[in-house]
Length: 161
Image (tube, rainbow, N blue to C red):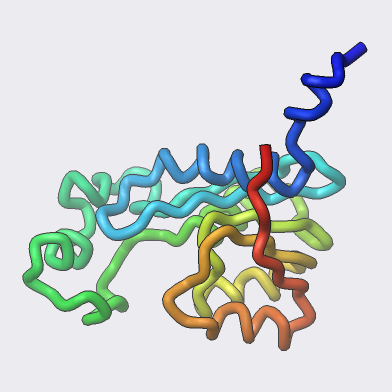
């Protein structure tokens, strides 16, 4: 039986999965941003993802992505030529890992450290994710707006004890 102090420190599910997403983001190999994702169905983790170069490609922070390196060394402006970046977003990686292992994402909840961009929002909608819970806002609201239009519930999550 749990003592009252143990029960008091037990985080609610939302906070628990958001905290796990923060741990997942520590695996990123990208210069620009660290993002972590946990996909959950029925309170069970079905996939995780972090941003970085594709499998088998040199890590971004080791020079694998020239665009990120050029951005990091100020040879390129912040939002310049994003199309040249070879890094995979955390949301994409989590969805791809689900598919790779044959795990359906329909009706699942995605917990992420940063609200999805518009590119990831399209993939999230088509993967059947029912809800996205995020910690930090993205630099724009285009992804959140598209998710809502696509019938995906979007919520800013809370981290608690």
